[in-house]
Length: 366
Image (cartoon, rainbow, N blue to C red):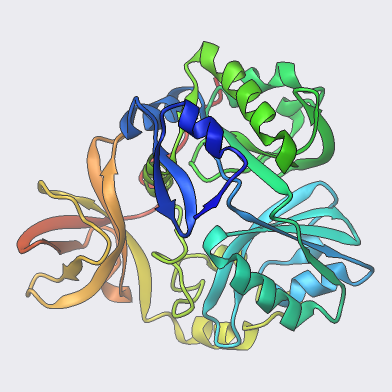
């Protein structure tokens, strides 16, 4: 298994390590997943996300290259701003979901999912490498997420960046955090306010320790993959390989807001235009269990007549809500809010209700 630069730090903290897509990653620390989840919702969670991939696009045609690859409108990005988007196949299926950061008109950074790094790098070079330099900087880059309502207050003493003035999806490409050279973005994958901090891999452990020291006085804690999953599920954020894949389109996944069909051309635009005109036949729906039972990935979703109509793509407890929730692709007419469906939980039929929007919405900043 590959190891992030924080591997030894996790062992010292007593983390339970697991194989996550070929990476040795902490699933939880001694306090447990629920404790880490609640710390993030109430104060701060500090996450190792060094396994994520960082791919740079440089050159006079860098913006053109990125635009060819992604569905969102790159021309809307100014220096120091980022957006969430997807890259599609010519069919409209999703290659990956990612964040694009504009450092300058000739320099863009994309952060991609760890499990897709090799595939993405190959795809990006094949489809856009003739337009600009495409460079994978993942091995020398570390990324730490500092998430929660108290994140800005706890982090501010470590940097001269005016964090309260940094908007959502804003970033500073060159700054210092705890005396170390870094970049900082107001982005995350927890449904909370917070930051993602890039630094050199050699500085990762020092930065990690300083961030934990800053988080501790307000109740912040290190958090592992288990809490990261429950947090993103509560916020109804999709996970590639579960809720997104090459057989699903962003319109089916409820990501039409990142698809700018009237903007510049991109790979997959014509099939997506046709799908939007015809209307999607299935969509990713969120549901709340109305009876006792936990929906797990792969469980069948049935209608009132007992016919299988879809499968759970993500599911589990929502600790903040004290409910069990999930997502899955269903025929469009069955995915309407208020519709009653049923989950086959290992042979037991459990009812659920389709709901609109995220299961959890973040509170104000502490």
